[in-house]
Image 1 (cartoon, rainbow, N blue to C red):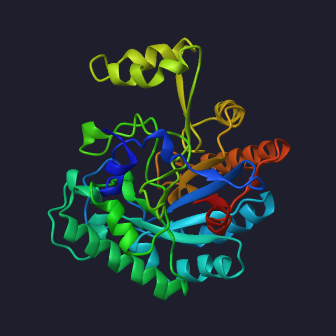
Image 2: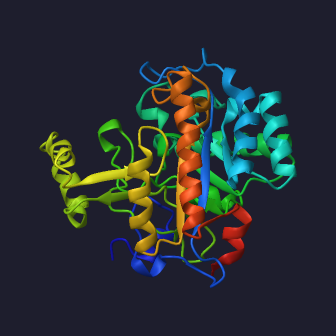
Image 3: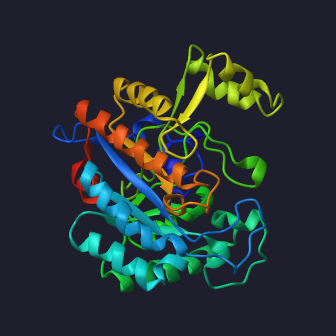
Length: 340
């Protein structure tokens, strides 16, 4: 049976789950929000991937960002990759927040900058799940062990850089004691770039395996507009008619809203939040890239004004979530509340 829990138990997160796999949370959990930060090196997003030449200039700004999060009631999850895990400033800043229980630390794998270096650096190999399983696992293990040694705590949450899961990534995570994956970006298809297709994955958290040892927390994206119930089918059709979705968006017939301050307006985000909450989504998963908290490192934060806009977005979104009774969640909150 395609998509059944039995199939998923074989080790793939790439197949959308059966409805029986959807996770349930205890009555006291309510509706929560999780802020995930892809905490990574700076590199040119428009250039070919390379093992060297990256920067970490923005790392000092994480202290300001953390203070801001504490001010607005957010508890960030820093999904740390190899360059950041080996940077003493990052370890000091993030480690302090983790020790004070004001943040969590997790794993994010950028294979092109993460040893062992055995593969050719290509766009296809930038998705860790495309690598031979033994190499994907070796890179992951090296990073996970480095994070545990640096921060003094075993990470329990993972995100594949570029959302690059593979057929055997789930078993790799389970073997390492990872309890949560948050690599699935629902409603997005990266197959044209050699990556996964998450078009038909659910928005709600679900169990990857029938033992209920690995929980998937999809990054939240919402369809908005009068045609939103047909959003997945329309995105499929866009493979053959590339301009289709853009035209529908211009006429407010269908819009895909990702809950991120990077390229998404506050007004759009609030519309998406209303839809998600009104449909009963138990957990909103927000995301952004750490280099965007300093100007000049990502397409979304080219100037100081752009960075200020990201802070304004977060302030407005968390203010609105507070009004709607949505509290921040930690990794421990989620694991303690989910019903197995």
